[in-house]
Length: 581
Ligand SMILES: Nc1ncnc2c1ncn2[C@@H]1O[C@H](COP(=O)(O)OP(=O)(O)OP(=O)(O)O)[C@@H](O)[C@H]1O
Image 1 (cartoon, rainbow, N blue to C red):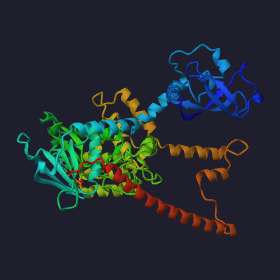
Image 2: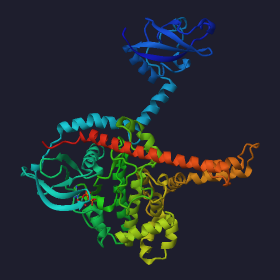
Image 3: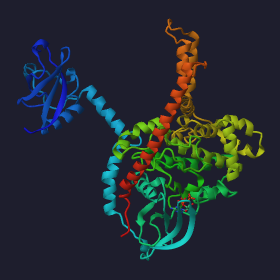
Image 4: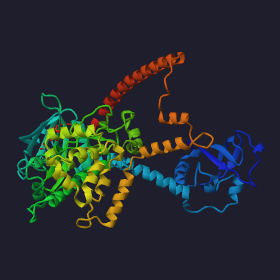
């Protein structure tokens, strides 16, 4: 059999057939019957001997054996697992055993398989990502219609942003198509990113965002090459337009239900409409986040009302980042609207380097996601939208900027802000609305607008918040109250608790009694010891200076590497964007 690889196995040679360790020597040939196989023996060469009963061996594996090894790993009968699992041993021992027939499921094997599966499916989803990229994307390309520049007739300009111009357009050669039923964005910078994100969204969570039709690179004109992006026309109004109306939120009720409700106007009714809007925004965000996309520019201007589905959808994925593969993830660069941006500004810790190569980024994505919880950036912005909907006087840009300043002064503590703002008459209506049903709305707002990303709710958790799940009429049911308590418990700041435990240990502890000494606590708290002027201190200062210099050099080097990687990467994935012939 042709040898295609080398394997390492740890087996326990068991009594009474185990040879004495003295009788074994390195390189000795052992004839061992493969524990996965039929009677023919494969030859293994003894590589090293630990204190018996374990023997480390290196052996050659043929093609078929590799397949069996992988199979055995997952059913727990294979290379590397302990003897209790493998039932292995030397040839004499094995030959006396009954031949195993069929699949043997073992507890470690099942745990290993389940652990691997949960990792591969954890947000942002390594396994679904591979399937999406290498199967769905290709299949979609085969069946989807393609367009070119001449297929469109330009209509009214809808908007002009920093990265492109948006027009309402219709198809030139399709008499059946409605007048202006498409939207075209001619984008320069970030156009390729937006095509990538929209294609991903269309495959993974189409209902979250405006319906994307096609995107391509148009380089036929004399102007610089432009990316053309086509969507279905969703509707005339964004949430920002609707919120500017004096009739908000009743104007939205008409849009969602198609008719005016025969109910008296008042806080209760307004609260229900705002609840519906928030649920739709969070639902769309949950779709994006579950697939590894963070929008980074959530604001009322980027939430559009879809007339066809009667729901709110998200638009403008130009600043979005796909953390499944690390596209458009540039931690040191901020592309954000300061009015709606979370205080952390970066969605990933600044310690996290720029995304590595695609396979590595993909493999590590669940770990990085859990470490940084980047989706909470969008949750903060959605919280501010909630706040603006509840407080009519905070809907203008200026008042929102003022609010942001006040909140910053209160260390991003909404409760502290409320204490200062409650006497203001223009804010009273908002507080009354949020205080309905025992303050459940205020509770949700507090869990979204928090300084620490880790303490903010995820979109999924926010959707499960009792604010949305109202079983009773006004009062909360017993189950809802319980769920609320659970939510509150999980939202606690555990760093405070850790600090408290350290304090407690300081009071009760000496090294002898098993506690910590003051000196050890000093280390734990990372408090610099009191400075003393001395020669060693001068040496320390120079060492620190040198260290800072080295860090600066490394940072510069890193930045150049980042730049190189970015260029290489933009080359890599721009191959996916179709070009006009
Ligand atoms: N699918 C759509 N259906 C209807 N209108 C749309 C659609 N997509 C975009 N628009 C309209 O075009 C406007 C601009 O879109 P978009 O925000 O994507 O462009 P932009 O160039 O990124 O703008 P900005 O930089 O200001 O955010 C939106 O405010 C909206 O009114």
